[in-house]
Each structure stands twice: as structure tokens, then as C-alpha cells.
Amino acid sequence: MSAQAKPSPDVNQALDSSKALVPAVVRVNEQRVARGFWPKIARTAGKIPFAADALAVFWAARDPATPRKAKALMFAGLAYFVLPTDAIPDILAGVGFTDDAAVMAAMIALVGRHLKASHKQAAREWLEKKGQG
Image 1 (tube, rainbow, N blue to C red):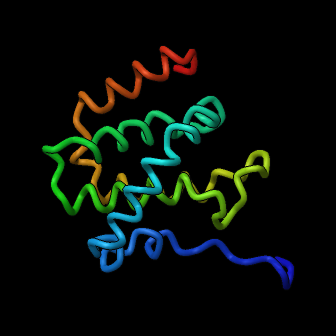
Image 2 (cartoon, rainbow, N blue to C red):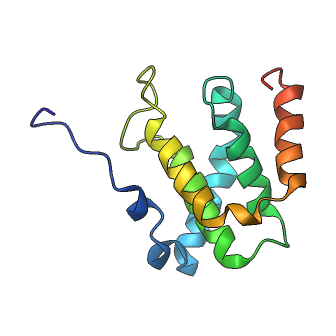
């Protein structure tokens, strides 16, 4: 690693529940996701292997039946995905989404039990409709 390169942030810090559950942070994350999720997923779904997971998490986070704490962590993971600047720039072919994939995997490990079959089905249907499933 060069002296100017920055190491990837620890995935656990990206999903730090002590910060992700703060109401003001939850609101900011929800706003980031509301503005940036659809443009980003539409642009990248065919390029990232975790597109179905991201979509299922999005629908779970918007589901009124999903517990508040799980939603907060879901929005934190999705907000990281939509941020234009993150640990590894998304424009780097082959490696640009590895940090996003790691954050998504960690978040699903924490709250994946709240992903319902209906969320996963909606993700598959959206990808098929867009010709990416």
C-alpha cells in the first residue's frame, strides 16, 4: 500500500449500531437512500453480484413490519452503498464494489432474518423486468 492510499474502513465501523441507531443519523441515512438508491441500483445492477440482496434489503427497510433497529442498520448499509465517495471508488473496474459488498454482507449477517420471501421475490422480479435477473 502506498503512503497515500487509505485502508478500507472496518466493516463493523460502517455498521456501528451506536451511531446507526441515533434518530438523526437514521433520518440522514433514509434521506440518502431515498435520493440515491434507485439511480445507483439502476446504473449498477448488471455489474454487481449483490444487486438482488441490495434490492431485498431496500424493500425490507421500507416494510412497516420490519423492526426499527433492523431498519436503521439496513438504511446504514444502503446509505454506504449510495454514497458517491467510499473506501474504494466504484469506478475502479473489478474492485470498486468490494467494500460495498462487504458492508452489504455484514449488514445482512446482522439483520438478514428480517428479509422476507416477499422482499426477495420483489428483488428478483425487478431484476427480471430490467433484464438483469
